[in-house]
Image 1 (tube, rainbow, N blue to C red):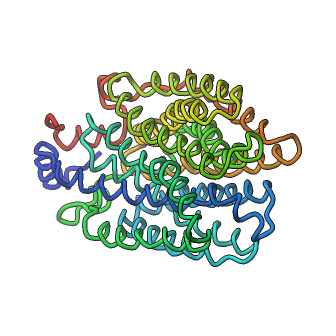
Image 2: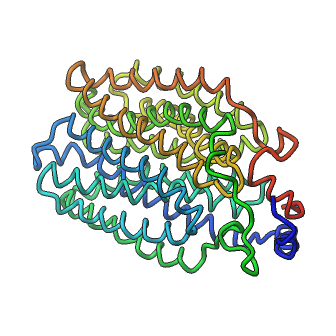
Length: 435
């Protein structure tokens, strides 16, 4: 894949790969983790504040579902378009402006005085957040030793659930004792600016974007994007995983307060199970897939997520039991999401197109699973009752389980040879030493 004119580059990068810069690997993963955690915080602080924004802005349950939906659609489109852009222009030129913009837009959400204003802010915010997901997967894969690819992707992705769906509902509902929802939005937008500055100083460009001595390594043509079977399958399975995650996340506060009659503090604690469970799922399941295989773990996650969500639906106003069941359902639901959006997508990518493939898989999943599904759930809540929104999420998980049987296995420990663009490039550059 790298021509004869690039032999000097191959030799230089082969030496780098054999020694492996572990220090850079963990610096990059730490910054990606913080950035994606702030994406989760800025995105999902809306859910626990939603019941308290309704009276102030005159919102309905449908409006709150739509707010989650428009951000998801904007996120998905942006992930697809800008993911390919980062393969061509570079990672930092995409990541840093994206983090700055979504941080500012999060703060501006606290200044909204109408539904239309809030919708416009959330759309632009979604445009900025999408590239953090697709480009972040590419940076994580490029920085990571192949034997740690699932682990590092899990660490990077798990912060989304930890910050956005575990910490945010507790912090938001407790801060409501002392201030209003507007000031809470403004507070959470500040840390992203610091993270953006650090990313500009630390994140490196991949070989195909910033080659040594000005010699450009070969990038696969864009038409090869769908050559691997898991690209198309990744899109539809991720759609199902995201439908489960985002319907649960968007509608759960309304369900707990409206149907089960929990008080705001009980709601905040039960809802935090989404984040704590999701955090462990996104951290542990990709790492487990390094050993057991991507396909096996995805199938297991969909099946167990559906079982625990069904049990949650049958439970009354028992905060402790609700927390436990929701914790387990989200652990496995987020676990499926993390494996598909991270290593499955990356290992289906041709050389030089990791962010493009990740953007396509995440983008389609976001548009329909994170965008359309919450809006459908809002319609179901208004016309048929909040409890049936969880039935909709349960159905999505079952469809995801059936589709996951058709995935191809790509984990290096299971496949036994280079099956992805990044693995083939590393083989060509001289192999990878033990991590």
